[in-house]
Image: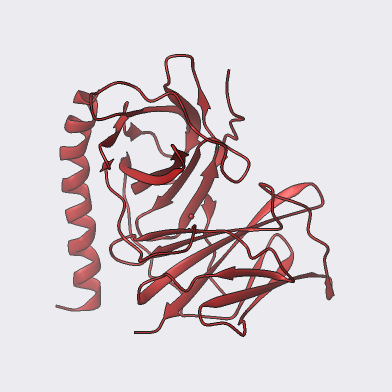
Length: 275
């Protein structure tokens, strides 16, 4: 099959999955800060955290389940998405621990890894979480609920759907440079195996980063194909660096977030983890 044929077939498959999931999604049936906003364009190129093997997230983990409200959203429209985490007895979980500055992180990414958002839902007294989400264009998205309870971290996932014409985009080739919002970011390997270091510059000079989520940066890694998820904490010492040594081999999209000039910026890289 030609490359064009594969893309057409993939688009048709996603459309069929969407139609089925809309039917299924409708049948499923004081707070942390919410950060509404659109999923960022992941860029053309130019998630202990990070420890352990990468695994695709699921709707259940250690007896906990993510129970989502309506998963069919309208492209380019801000809509409220609601979900709850249920325990093994089907009761909404209410006790969550602060982890990297928040009690719940919601990562939303389109399945071709070209759209990305990092949100912080609010929890109501009954234990249900909600946040406004904007899916910027049509497609199938994955929402990852990343949280910690009873000193154990969990990642649960569910699909979100935005109807409409969808042409999946290929990932850019791996690169050590990326640009976003006027910032130039360079990626290089650190001295330790799996260590990645980033340098952020603007107008030719390196910038002093402001704290973001209690650290000088934030990194989510998603593996192409199965969307294996890694939420990596920065190393405490030295430059903006992350230990990604626990990531399994494959092609990843790296979403680096940093804060400067009182704004959070997101830049994306395609990165190969060697086999």
